[in-house]
Amino acid sequence: MHTTLVTDTVTVFSRELRPVLRDPFSMIFTMVQPLFFLGLFAPLLPGTVGGGSALQWFVPGIVVMSCLFGTSAVGSNLQYEMHTGSHERMLVSPLRRPALIIGRALKEIVPMFAQTALIVVVTIPFGFRPHLGGALIGLLILGVFCVGLGALSYTLALASKNREWLFWSVQQAVIFPLLLLAGMLLPVDGAPGWLQALSKVNPLTYVVNAERALFNGEILTGAVGWGLLAAAIVAALGLLVGTRAMNRA
Amino acid sequence: MIHTQALTRHFTAGKQTVEAVRGLDLRVETGEMVALLGPNGAGKSTTLRMLTTLLTPTSGTAKVAGFDVRTRRREVRGRIGYIGQGNGAGHSQRGRDELISQGRAYGMGKPAARARAAELIASLDLEAVADRVVSSLSGGQRRRLDVAMGLIHAPELLFLDEPSTGLDPQNRANLQEHIRRLRAEHGTTIVLTTHYLDEADQLAERVIVIDQGRVIADDTPERLKADYAGDRITLSFDREDDAVHAVARSTGIAGAQVERSGTRVTIESRGGARLVPKLLQSLDESGLTVAAVEVARPTLDDVFLTLTGRSLREEGVSASS
Image (cartoon, rainbow over all chains, first blue to last red; front, side, top):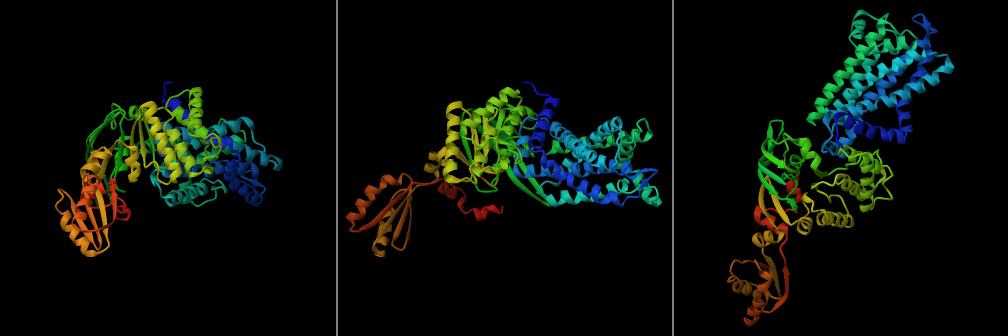
């Protein structure tokens, strides 16, 4: 059989996905944190945020947050495989280097879908009403963002080599400012100017705004366009630096 | 199968440059079974990692299985098998899944990969554990799985980096048996690194001794031992006087090194075993009564000692380098 970049990517993707499919409960652990936020933070919200129901505003943010937490951590799996020797095993095979990063990054879409589905199912009894078509487009944008974020996380793992502390320090140092500046938990509308300025250069802000619009059925809006663009930029950047790092590995 | 010219690799750590491999010229022909022997830090693994495309040489060239390791990496990768020091199988994966993924990585179709995986699982005695998560396997089982993964595409050239490190004697013997069978049944060219003397001695037909990034000897184990180390004859006497006289009588033996400590005299000489009957007779004629005789064949450690003045067994000395 002749291999191509596509078949190589499928090989890597299937390999990454298999343990998840064999043991779906492994995904539950990465979902615990967003569910805590839902359960312990949502009750603190006022009845309405930005003119709508608080839940309609809050849940899409939690969906993005769950993606952010889960996907930004995946580099640690690679770091573990670098440590045990199975990454070396992949490197010595004729698999194309870009496939090693693209296949891994694409796989991150699958747990993200599962997590989103869980969050939506859990919140519907409490009054969350997602717009189906919008939510599907929202997942698409989130999928693109996920691929980029996953690739960046793997890049960080490759750069950190065997220094696990370095990976986690950088991951935490990046994730939390991004999260807070994106207006995920609280609206940044009333924030001081400097914070609003920072929020405007945060790609995550646009993704969160797009998800909010889409889950509420506002599909053909500027927010959605900006969200898609921001996600696409993150994906392109992630795959670019990821491929470069993998080529050097 | 392998041809290197002035292959060199430097590592830079801070301001210090370490020359891990210095100008290695190496030729390995198809079907050979070669061991790279040397202490930790000698440059064996670095050499292997360059030959397997895992590490880019600083300078020099290397052709492996017909292709340049620098410019035609994918061609090299598709033709060689590699069993590294770590575990090739992902710990969260199942052994059989990993074997199939590997097969796919080497361009096998799904049915072919599945069939080949089953074949290797049977021949490496992994049936009972192949469908379990890798992290639940014992060290020996994981090592066998590593071997299976390295062989998935039936490579014509197989590299093994310290294959038996961390294995108990039983598993070591099994692994060596498997390597021998591979060679006998498929004519696979095999290059392994080891710091186990007996492994190099028993397994390899050619031993390349590496120290401080250079080849210092290259021959069959028998020839190396014959050329660089002699048999060691140890004579024990009841009285020190006799030992002193024995030394005087033994110094006449051509090419022999004679040493005495207390009542023991050691004579190191090539083909020394054949000298023993005559030596004993001559000592007897001089009225010196030998209490005990011991003849030790040389080991590759003696070879290494002769070549470098250091013992391979003193791992502590070299481990830091």
